Length: 206
Picture: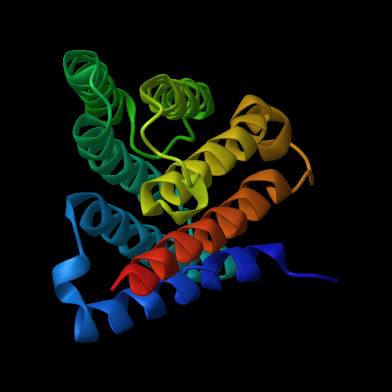
């Protein structure tokens, strides 16, 4: 049987390898957006490795998943703040989401799977991704989208959060049955492949 969890966990190796190559040979081509994505990949990989190990040893992973989502929230807040013109909306939404989630973790408990919150978080990021494309097509100043590194990064995020959304919506059913996390695992793998393509474009532009 295919171990989707292991494939998903190891999928960041491809973009991380490209990051390493770029940093060794073409560091000057790393703009702010690329640095942010590199940080997100590293954060995701670290979290996935520990989560995979803990889950296979029957150790609760809820607190680690929640810690990763805090990191993801902040990193993507900076990412979209740099990327799209509605900066005040991005800042406000990110700040409200951050303080609300911190409140849940501190006042309620960090040992809980906040599936509904994660679903809302996914919808917000999908909205930011779609706004990016709306703004991009409205400007009409990018002719060859496939040569844009940012295009591949945003496509990766759009695929990831679209796939993750189904998992978060079905979180109660998943936690109470043998229904697997296939959606989020496959989406995470595709995200890292698309991030890798974006980093390869950075390499080609060097």
